[in-house]
Length: 624
Image (cartoon, rainbow, N blue to C red):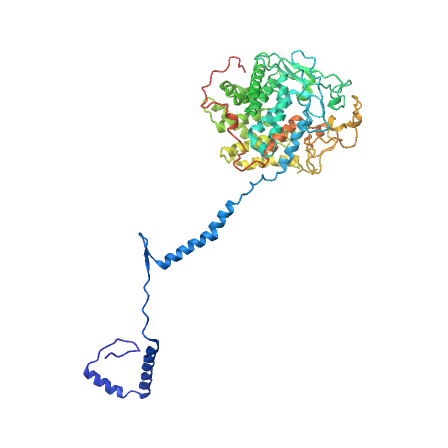
């Protein structure tokens, strides 16, 4: 028999002798222990009677899936998990996407967009001629309706255009530059203009100006021998009625307004050509008008370049020289040639623009501090940036590359000069850059150069360039854009006076703007030439708010005197607001995102035929 060993060890089968020995030994065991063992064995027997035989173990069922065999129970669990995930996650997503949603609206306008809306209105207030019904400036009406009426070569006279500033003179040189600036800003930032609802408005303002510029010469001819430079005049310390001696609303002008023509105008002619060429790209959706602009641009460009007519338009002309004196024309040659090339794709223009003699005569690479300041008189920084654009996005190569590299390097150096850390220009304690050395009308230089700074930053970002070197210092596109923002923020109120220098923007802004139309009430009274002095000398705020006008701005000490007599600080100008508009649209975040890039680098090049044709020899008329 088998013995159960509950203590451990092996189970063995005993033989007979061993069994007897075991029996004798067992007889000597403690009877109590033996009794306990018998009771234990009885308990196990009784339990087996009561519980019956042990149950047989159930076998797991499997499912053959072909590539794998799994337990049926596991398969069921997997199916339930998938169904649960569908109802808990996927189904709500499907339902949510099936519900129609409104498209998200544009982001709220930032401070630059708000200022942009107002800045554009200044041009509506400066319009001359018969105003459209929707002009939007209630205190303005038709004016200058007899301008140039005695001219025999201009049908309808020189009606239209824009008054330059707080007076009623139409200076064509700064007017043309203002139109070029507006067109440039539209070409680079059309998506932003559309996003903020100003695209049609700014185009209408440009057309108002270019329609007028086309009247200043025989734009239907291929060759001209004169160009009208100005309507209205003002003698220094005048004693007889003129545009400065009188203080009249433009609607009430009754004094003579002379028309000044010039037979030599390489500077003025170049700027008018640039304005018309740039606008022709803006209006390519209107082929007939665009063609008309291109034709006019070609005619006046030819006039500007004509040999024997290289005397600057303002030279020895006191009615012009004191106000908008031109100091060179080589910058306009470079500027207008660039725009003519973009407008037409004619390689002769880019050949001229990149001829090494041109930047030499323009002193483009001489590192002259004042030549790095973009303005109505100095187009070099703008022209160099415009031509750098060509290299950055099209890279035409030989034979243009050498000069284009020079323009690109000069542009980068100009941008370095903007930073206070390099000490090129002085800054006020409040942070305003003194680009014109504090000589008055500071802000027009501030905003024009803020525009080219922001634009160059966008050019670099559009070409995946993070920055550039100023000597050993690496400057980023963010640094450059921050500079432009700091200057605009100063204009809009972040300055020691805590006032905005844009009329109608913010809670505190100039109230005594040097402006005849804004300071004289529209009350049904036609004031005489000197009868308006009472409004000029009044201590009261202007009765008409000239919304969006950017005044000349504070002095080198951040001081500003809100007085009409202080015209250097309180007078707005056309070129000032053109630069302001361009800078604001470049900096605003409205219109960014949603696939919209800051710079539509393809817009301007649709007329440029790739690949570039071989450069023809320089025109025979080209002489240094």
